[in-house]
Length: 65
Image (cartoon, rainbow, N blue to C red; front, side, top):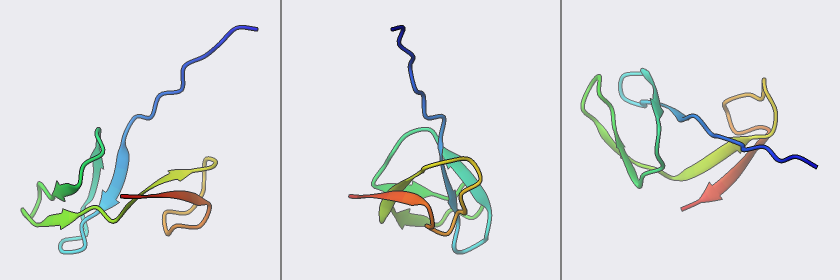
């Protein structure tokens, strides 16, 4: 059997202050919004189980920090 590599491209988050969507390449304890400069702690990291899952936590696997 041949093998394959699974690659995660980015992590999506929305700034609660200005509403801008952002994508981070790496997991971090804090993120800074490039649009408004606000800094936030990362509460959890979630992975979608399948394409089309909602972004409100349904269908996601949380990873607590």
